[in-house]
Amino acid sequence: MKRAHKRAHLLIWIVLAPVIAGLFALSIVMRPGAPVNETLPDVLIEEAR
Amino acid sequence: MSHDYKAVQSTPFKKRFDLWLLIGIALYLVGFIAVSFSTQPAGESLHPVQVVIRATGTLAFLLLTFILCIGPLARFTDRFKPFLYNRRHLGVTTFLIALMHAALTIMWYHGFSETNPLVSVFISNPRYDSLSGFPFESLGFVALIILFLMAATSHDFWNANLGPGLWKTLHMGVYFAYAALVLHVALGAIQFNKDPIYVGLLAASAVTVIGLHLISGIAGLRSSHRDGLDGWLKVAAVADMEDARAKIIRPAKGEAIAVFRDGEKISAVSNVCRHQGGPLGEGKIVDGCITCPWHGFQYRMQDGQSPPPFTEKIATYATRIVDGVVYVNPEPNAPGTPQTPSQIGASA
Image (cartoon, rainbow over all chains, first blue to last red; front, side, top):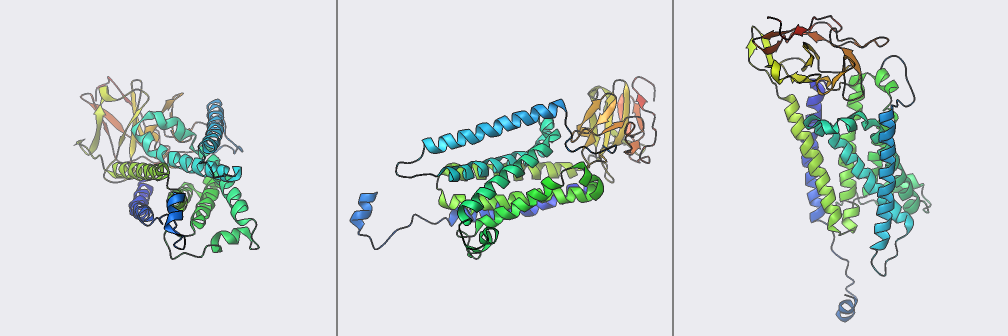
């Protein structure tokens, strides 16, 4: 591969690496919890569990 | 090579490779479907279409991960060279599996809408300002378009007509397709499926692909400007040069040089193949010709010309042997210029 392409190749990964890692980490942290229906009595929820 | 075009270039080895690839794909799909149904929690009913969507999606992602690892790994070990040689077939296969995943997804989740299914992919979920609720399918669609462009132009016809430089630039789009796919999975499947195996696989894929490309990218740029002799660069001791293989020298300026040993002869040529810029120094000598590890393009050692009827030419370099050590002149000769090889055992 030509040296110019090698530089472009490396530059792309230097930019993509933090973008992928950052958004991936955020997507894990911001995952929604299990949905809860607050109108149901606690007894029913416990039973369901 | 330049002589003519064939729809699919095939050799017995490529045919065996394709057969094993198809067997592997069939085993993965059957295994995934069987495991999905056998481990289905009581009370849940998985539809076969949903299972096939997951099976094709995970398979396409794993194949793309493997394809992206082949290049850097082939620099560290020869075991991955056969995969490098067959990477095109792997890439087109990956696109076809991804297309199957996308077609089933669009038909299953958007096909019953009054809106055009392709438009529905982008507008049915308008939460583009949310991370956990992001319309992740749009990212998968963008990646599919990039994979399509690459699969459609993977033939030598496009390489010859676009030119190796533009062709290579276009095919670097695969890195953006991979990034879009990591986010497609992270903002999609992983948001709904709490099984840690999906998070683990995605993280392992991203760390491996990014790590390998950064390491090989930095190593590839490093200059190996060594001790010289009157402006010539030191290559290695003759005893350290493996027969039919090359040492790659990276001068401070210009392209890398591949210095080959063929029996008792030493010759040097440009490390850049005329076809797609493949690293000739990572290839070997086959039938007396330097053979590119990427797609098998060949050049004669003595003049850097492809054997007739092919017409490709690469630069040659002068070499010399002094006290059992090989040196190369970093000034290239014009492509195709005959250059007498250095003879091992002859006095300098």
